[in-house]
Length: 418
Image (cartoon, rainbow, N blue to C red; front, side):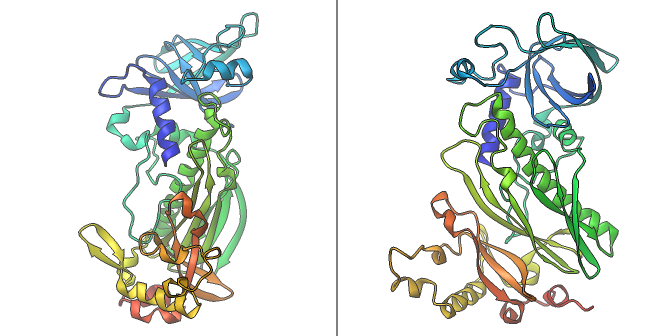
């Protein structure tokens, strides 16, 4: 989240160094540059960005729409030195002083057309782009900055925002995510099933529901999965675009998002639990280590409200906190395993990690199925960097031990009839 915010601020500076109190309208075009499909966005006062669909990496643009100059990658010692001190992006070569590739064209009746050149004496390439949408970022803040959506307690938002990405509110990013996905093997569990899909540009897997008795529910669930997948992909591609804006070691990489591990830990006719975990790193003091579980309600097609099924949370003036009933079950399980605060006093200080004492502040829930056993997994999530080793499931409470937690609605979800 922090890195994504920093990247957004860099783009805000680029796209309007003298930006007024209200953001200017942006116009989004799509079409072809030679034989390559591209999407381009320009500001009313000039400047902008574009990407090749097959890559998804933003390239900054400077100047009026009639003569847009591309930024150059920060590669080589001369460019690296020139970019220091916040001078990036650079629109001319630091050694030759030649400008970057240039778009020369005009907008007529919603079509931006002209020629692109990579320097004097080089062959021009024709481009033709049609206008897709105009939008004002101030009127749809979710389009250009991370926004955390309110989701029920027990669930987490992970390494990226959970904001919706639509052609109306975020046309540029929406088009960036319209790319063919590689399909993985299907995993069937009774009347429901899922498979992993991969955006070849970001290279990590994310699940989609492939079978469900109610097509409407499946559509709603897949919209949530696609939104979360898309936000992670955008964060990865934003990091790769720092090839033009940053000089830190991770600049131009996928920020380790390509190593993101996303797992389906539980799938039944009524519930689907997913965990996002990894160590995203696109600059900053330290990587963003995370373990982010969430559960989807396959009856309603939305995030599961644990509070509706379980006595796991108590409402306070400051929001929901883990209930005494849940904490008692956790404490009982820890004690049975020789863990927890009582065992900490006798622990070897060099071996004791303190991970059993981070609750209730950093608690998240999900379901898991291992070796035929269904359980409520109590995980550590959202801890500071220094406690990153504590991330993950720490206690698994089998369904058969959850009786003190169960509300009347829980039976149909945890023990559905065939």
